[in-house]
Length: 320
Image 1 (cartoon, helix red, strand yellow):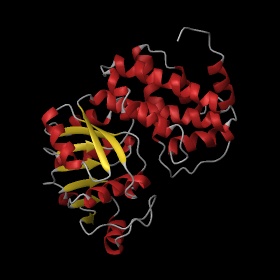
Image 2 (image 1 turned 120 degrees about the horizontal axis):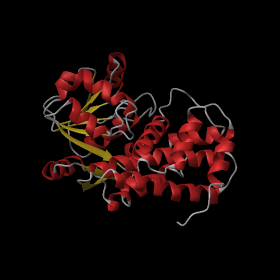
Image 3 (image 1 turned 180 degrees about the horizontal axis):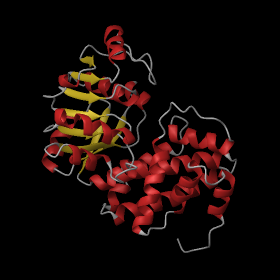
């Protein structure tokens, strides 16, 4: 049995994929009324509405129904993960806990697996990340992701367990690289959206993606990541998808910033908090990350979008 905490778009999509792969799935929703409605109608609601749920999925609001699962996936926003684990860590202790969020915690400046280890020392932490949209996974479209787990034997078992007919997992032991690839690409996606929203063109977006990838490498390598991880699905692959598709919440948020349009505050945009957290990390490590630093200033209301982007392109000339 596979447990999934979080009945939002991504958690629901994974539940469907695993059920189609022959697994029993227990999908936990925070709201008991919502959980009861989904279980009764066998249809998803919220950000991924109308998806039919296979019979193998049981929707519950009772966390006590999850212990005993072969793995529990944490499909929660990054900035909610630490608080959730502090309250509920004892229930989840001793399990394989797979984070499905992308970002850096604003308080601790740590990634999701470090938060899992802090709250549940006896758990086996891992992260599932890479280029993916919930609608594609739920629709049975082919998707490839990175599963990173420092414990290689546990990673092999999780890879076998979580691979589904249209969900191909590549295994990695470089948790730091996988986490930071997924975190920083959200920041760069907002910057790319703002660039297009400002009417600066596709060439400017390509430049931001390239220099943003350099920032991703700079930070991840300083913190011990392997270069090849960043060239894989969880780094370059995820950046390409997120920086170029209107399905990306971070990219759409950037578009709204660039155009001066309002953006629905109910939509979680992980890159906003991550920009602030990564900018703090860059200062602590004395790293040059101008795109991230500038975007943090934009999202915190400290710099106008047009001025910030213009300043990025007016930086002193340097060797690539």
